[in-house]
Image (spheres, rainbow, N blue to C red):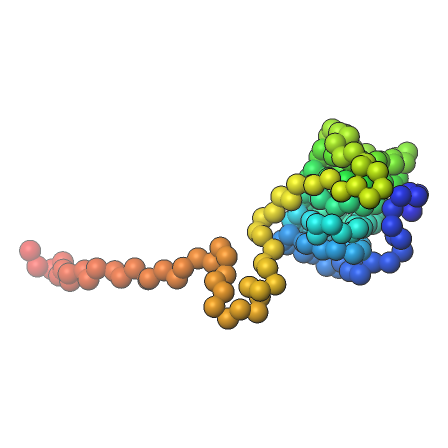
Length: 174
């Protein structure tokens, strides 16, 4: 929107509609636009120029770790943006923000610390590494196709407990 450093912000590969609610972590590259609700962490793939845009109807409850971020909705959780962060007029962030460059429009709210953590390394330099707090690791491409792959965090089936036979007592006797 306002930034000159952000990649083309008009192309988004994925849209989460205002009628959608996602529970779980999202791993992505490219562009992601959120109008709905996400309960989980949002993580951009390493070495991507990913852009996340959260509209004024969008809400994220979890940690966000992306290079380019435009917020006009609500984030409840820490934010890591190693390239460019834009907080529009209706943005509400309840958590700490770790950034390289930040734009903040009048009306944006931050309930947490702003910490300049990621430094630009100039042209051709390596991008800083951002933390990737995840609830569950992204499966590798091989594990999806492999038939012998064991599902992570899947509980083993439990045997049903058998009740001990109870003696029949006649209350009229004795």
